[in-house]
Image (cartoon, rainbow, N blue to C red; front, side, top):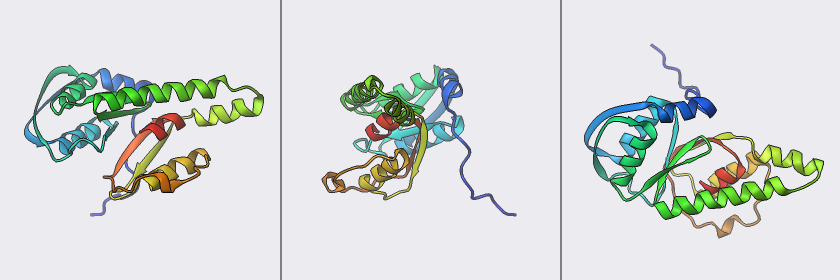
Length: 185
């Protein structure tokens, strides 16, 4: 018996992603780890969920969701540890409300700045930067390594990776994110 260890199944994007978020979710998981329930929901529904590093992934919560949309269910789960859930591109980001508010504002400002630029070459570059992409990273990847992956994908030069604090992150995935969204997450 051989198993296929190739790439994971594609994540839902666009209309499929929005439809899944509005679909019903029913799940009961008493005394479960935050990371476990989010990974299960992501896998069950074929979506990307990123947990902000400021949230304890090993914290335990009781989950009892019935007749809620998936997005409302994720917001309810997040509320149990004083967090919120935001849609950024084709990814659900769960984190502190003030962080998510700042992230949404930064993404909107960067997107608007890109769209206001003029000239044919600039318009093509803007189009490229606003195309959604999927990024996966492994456990123990540093923020600088993840940023380098995003920068390389969008052909963006980052001047000084030394300014990024060292940390080790859990593996994850961002789906259908454009350059401003990928750099914000």
